[in-house]
Length: 128
Ligand SMILES: Cc1cc2nc3c(=O)[nH]c(=O)nc-3n(C[C@H](O)[C@H](O)[C@H](O)COP(=O)(O)OP(=O)(O)OC[C@H]3O[C@@H](n4cnc5c(N)ncnc54)[C@H](O)[C@@H]3O)c2cc1C
Image (cartoon, rainbow, N blue to C red; front, side, top):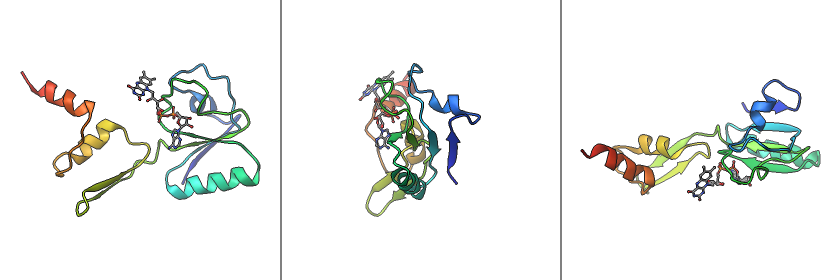
């Protein structure tokens, strides 16, 4: 079940905080999707109510207002954390809310290798 926070609700200011906290946009509502259907429902609602949409995930943009719009809906996908490994095809479908380190940990020992800064960091930490 998605989490929905309207302007005026408890948690609204926390929902507005991005990595750069100086946003001056005030969305009408935040929807924290848990699954794909939640995203589809939110888009449908926004279209029916003629409300502008912004997607948001890690809140890490260097441009403070890219992921928020006054009077709009923010569809936050950071709580979609499912990881689906297909060993046969050697592919992984990763939820938009997963962080690189979590993914790396999850795939350890599964014969899937990620090329990333974190892999290099782990190697250097392991060396004397
Ligand atoms: C300290 C710092 C260091 C950084 N270093 C690097 C770096 O080394 N390399 C680099 O490339 N970038 C770097 N960035 C930039 C950052 O990685 C990018 O801004 C990235 O877009 C952030 O992703 P996010 O999921 O946090 O996006 P958000 O901040 O949540 O959103 C950013 C934009 O992407 C859109 N968006 C977010 N999620 C989705 C989605 N699922 N579907 C469609 N649109 C979406 C939003 O609407 C918005 O326009 C850095 C940022 C910071 C603050």
